[in-house]
Amino acid sequence: MAKLFIITGLSGAGKDSITDGLKDAGLDYTRVITTTTRPMRKGEKQGTPYYFVSEDDFKHMISENKFFEWAVVYTNYYGNTKDAVDNALSIGKPVVLRIDCQGAETIKQKYRGAVVIFIKAPSIEILEKRLRKRGLDSDFVIKQRLKEVEKEMKSLEKSDYVVVNEEDKLDEAIEEVKNIILKESKYDRRRTKRQK
Image 1 (cartoon, helix red, strand yellow):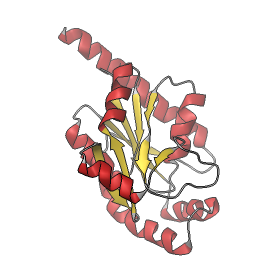
Image 2 (tube, rainbow, N blue to C red; image 1 turned 135 degrees about the vertical axis):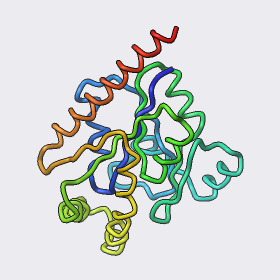
Image 3 (cartoon, helix red, strand yellow; image 1 turned 90 degrees about the horizontal axis):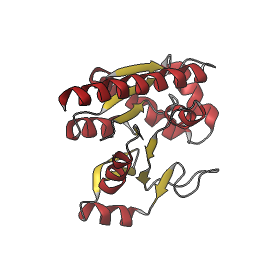
């Protein structure tokens, strides 16, 4: 069975950029695609970076117990289906799941072997600058996201690794996450061999 890696952290810290950059950095992994009700943004499409569904469809999936975990984040629903997680783990490569702090805690409780990598900006000021620079959210939403920072930072204590995504050093952060995944995957393989 493959190992599950959860990439989480603060909104605007660079979770998507790091997760997307892992392939270019030469990491062979399987990514679980999250399902969400949030509106599709410019440049996105179905399956990249999310499966986009209506709120009614999402609630129907909840009622049918389709989700491994789900949460409401900034008024939108996000979840990962059991099928998506099981299918990814069955492939045998490291499995990467990019998820919010709330979802990361849920998965860590359900899947004990998961490794949580928390992505952090160097400061709140830089985090705010990044949120404003990407131009995806209204001023109200940005303020909401910044209010959540204190709550989300509590997830640091439950994370296995913390990676600081410094300004203009995205490649270094990607490399650090890649090395964590490679190291943990090798350790897991060695431990499995000893248990046989």
